[in-house]
Length: 255
Image (cartoon, rainbow, N blue to C red):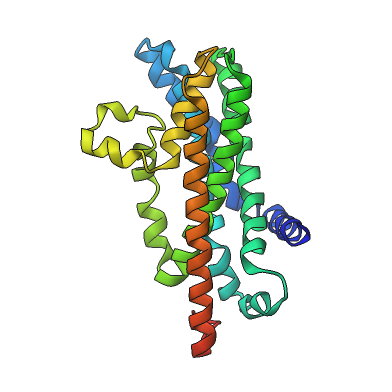
């Protein structure tokens, strides 16, 4: 736990010194206002919940890509990766702490989008199942942290993180059904969406707001958590194998 907290505090201090990295949180109100304006112009006030939840999930995924995914790569660029690996603290726990800090900060996107909808458009959310909503947010945060560790490992292996960052944003917004329901996609694409935790999160978040009783919520939250755990487990294995190979070749600094 001390290792986890140390990593989280370190990342929080780094973000405090470089707030521009969290630019998505500064632009999120504009994005929320744009989505709400489109739905209101189309006389679809029933889709307000889509316009509120979508920007928050976009911010969550964007910060996972742009900040969490570059944790190891930046340590390598700063020539501090060797010291980090040489320390007695498990590297995966340090990474988990740092990435969890980014994930928790990105959760402010939910507060921003709700406040923007209320202040500019008078949108008030009457949550039908508050406990399901809170549980979904918690499991979504956990799955995001696990996925971000996977991306961090992939980025150092690929040596071209920008390519992945640019290509993994909008496809996942679509596959996750963040703004457009996946039911409008071809059937084969809908099956692919089931393997994306954002699909389960977005759908469950909307249902928890609208319905007093959310159908199959234990199984659906379980899927979010399961996908996050599987991704984290695979990421830990790949990280171990990557570092083991780098140590054997004496190439820790260049991986």
